[in-house]
Image (cartoon, rainbow, N blue to C red; front, side):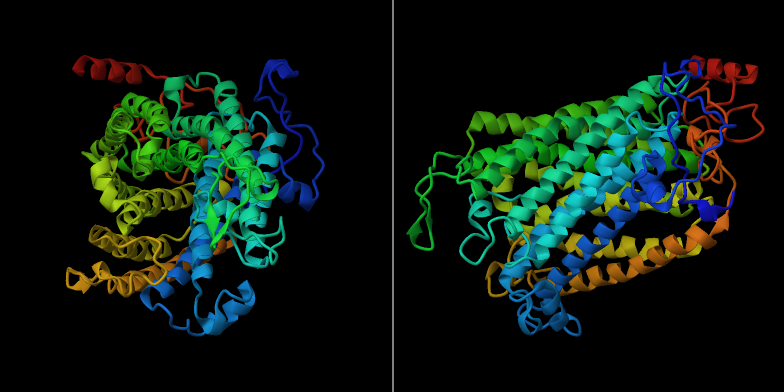
Length: 637
C-alpha cells in the first residue's frame, strides 16, 4: 500500500457491533461492500475512525508541546539575564502578546507569571496527556486487542473536539486585555479568584476566566475518552484475547482511563465552583475578611481556599500516573521487542500497575505539607507516599531485568526506551525526601521540586512518547523515520535534559524558589556557591542547555513530516514484533484487519525453541513444540 495514504485511514460507517447482524461478530466487515469515498472534512476533520482521531490527537498534542516548550525557553532568558532585553525577537513579542508583556523587549513580572502558568497547563493537559494517553491509546489499543474501532466512535470524535476547542480557548487567553492566566498552573485561590478583575477587564474574556473555561473543556474531553477506553478494552477484545494475554501497554491505558474517570469529576466540579466565584460572586473558596490593595474585599465569605487545594490535588496526584503509566506501557512494548525475549514478570507488572492506580488516590495531601495538617493525617499520607514507591520500583526493576541476557537491538525507539529507565529512576528516588513533611518544609516550592517532577515527565514520559512515535510510525504510515536523524535527535536531547534539570536539584537545596521572576538575583541564599557556581549563576548554563535542546528537536520535526511521504517503505511488521497490531496492513484499512484475528498465546512470545524465527505472533496457533517448551519452562519454575 502506498504510504502516501498513511494519514488517510478510511473512515466510512463502522463495522457492526455485537448482535447487530454479521452473526454477532464485532469484527465482521463486508469487504465486498462498495464504500463511497468520503470528502476531506469527513475523513480528517470530523472523522470517527480511531486511527485518524489518534493521529489528530498526536499532531495537535505535539504542536501544543512545542508551544509550551517555547514559553519555557522565553522564561529561561529572564532567569539567566533578568531585566535585559531579549535580542532579535524581544520587541516583536511585545506586539504579538500585547502591551505590558515585553516593553522594549524586557519581560514584565506579570508576563513571566503568565508564561509559568501556561507552560505547566499546556505541557501537561494539552501536550503529554493528549499524546501519551489519547493519541497512542486511540491508535494502538484497538489494534492491539483486535478490535475494529473504539466502542463509541462519535463520543471519540467529541472527545477530540472538546480537547481542540479547550486548547483554542487557552491560546485565546494570551490575546485578551491583561494577558493569560497568572495564578499558576494550579490556580490556587484566593489569588486565582481576584486576579484579572476590575474595570479594565472583561468579566469573561480575561486570562483567568478563560483558563477555567478551557480547563472545563479539557476535563470533559478526558472523561469522554476514559469511558470509551474502558468500554473498548472490556467489550471488544478479539476471540482468545484473555486479560492475561493483553499487552502491558493496554493494561497501562486501562488503569490510566480509570484514574481519569475517577479523579477528574471532583476537579471539574471545583473548576465550575471557582468559575462561579469569579463571575457570580459566590464564595466557595473565598474566606471573609480579605484585604486587597489596602481595601477590604466585600464578599459573602465563608469559603475555604484549602478546599480548592484538596480537590485539585485529588486529581493532581493521580494525574502524575496518568502521565507516566502510558509511558511505561510504551517502554514495555519496545523493550520486549528489542531484547527479543519476553518481558520479565508480566503478571507482576500488571498487578503493580493496578496497585499503583489504587494508591494514587490516597497520597494527594503530600502536596500540601505547608498547610499545617495534624500529625496523624500527615503520618498517614507520609506512609502511603512511601508505599506507592513499591509498585513503581517493581515495574522499573522488571524492565531492567528484562534487559538481562537479551539480544538487544539499539535502534532509535530502544535508545529512548532505555534512556527512560534511569531518568524515571532519578525522578522517583528524588521524590522520596519530599514524602516527609520535615524535609518538604525546606524543599517545598524550590527548584528541587521542579527537577524531581520534570525528571519523571520530561526525560521520563516525553522520552517514552518519542520512543512510541518512532516505533509505531511505520504502522501509521507504512514508512520508517530515518534512523540517523533519530539518533541526532536522541543524543543531544538526553545530554541537555540532564544539563537542565540536574543543577536544579542543587539550586533547590540552596533554597532557591521556583517562582522568582528575577531568577534569585539579589537574594543572599542564591549567592551561595555549589559546584563552583552560585545558585543564580547556574541559571545561565541551564538556559543554554534548554535552548540547545530546543534546537535538537528540529531534526525530529523535519524527520517526522518528511518521512510521512518520503521515508523508507516497510512491510506490515518491520520490527518483527508479536502483538496483533503488526498483523494488520500498514497503514490499517477500514475495520483494521483483513481477517478477524484470533489470539492463541501471550503478547511477548520471542525466541521460542523449535521456531524458525525468533518471534511468534499472538495470532499463530499452538504447535506441539510450543507446548513442550511451556511444559519445560513450567518444570524449571
